[in-house]
Image (cartoon, rainbow, N blue to C red; front, side, top):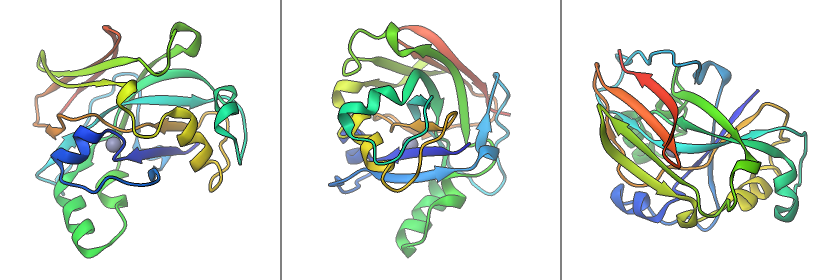
Length: 203
Ligand code: ZN
């Protein structure tokens, strides 16, 4: 399986990192070794002093396809979950300055914790899904899909022209504002519509 992730997909997050607003989705990938499942702890890597949390809604692909039109995108995922796109912001900054790829900053071991999923049928309106992240009980990030620059349909149409989507692939759809550094000992909990979906300890 593969993990496809979208960067710069919420305006307020673009502003907090002083990035440019993209005219098409910013896409990167993570390997399966990035996945962290079943509440496994995240071991803070030694190569970074600035690992950021980015809480994101995640689509689980249930049907193979390429060149999928956005009108039909809904036929290619049947579950929505919550994940963290851990980012070594210090390494990413160096990569950005040098115009280098982001893999070492984004795709390292354990950089993609994934929580539980809900069936798409649980959501009356995909353009109005609330989610949030707490650290040690304090809310750090809050998002709503009405604020996505590129919605789920547009994301799937765009990425599927380059990469065939396969059953089990995951798409991390971008993070809202409020990203920040995690420290050893932090307890991250993620929620969709107030329901707890994700639990990660930083060790
Ligand atoms: Zn992200």
